[in-house]
Amino acid sequence: MLLTFPVAQLRDLLKSAEASWSKGQRALWHQDAPEPGFWLRCDYGVYLMHNANLDAGEKPAVVHALEHNPETMPFSLWLDEKASYGCINEVEFIAAEVIRNAVANDSPLLLHVTAGQYPGRMLIRIV
Image 1 (cartoon, rainbow, N blue to C red):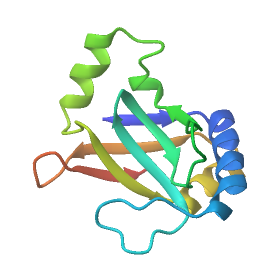
Image 2: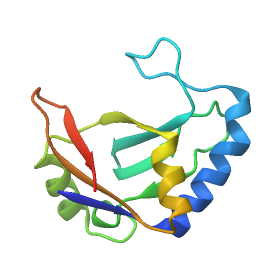
Image 3: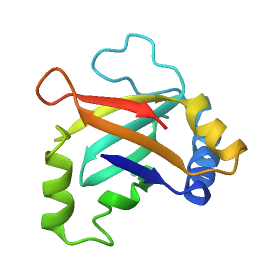
């Protein structure tokens, strides 16, 4: 499954992240010392968000993949598609450099995602 994240939205997400990382970063369950970066999340659609600490009541900035955007697609379509490659309530870390490179090259981010070796895990390859 190919996921496409538009560069204009990535630019805004990166700007938000860089303004917020000074507050520290939230860790995933397997991270002892998180670095600034992004999370590929699979719950309400598939989207990227930064891992900066949020202020009380602050909502995270997100960029949905064009192929799995619940704001523009019927529920059953994006739900069935994301489940087909093992993406159910999953979170994967994406290094900040990946987003910075896409923005610097004025290019959308393309991720090729397949079901991972373990149930509920994804295998991600940057295209």
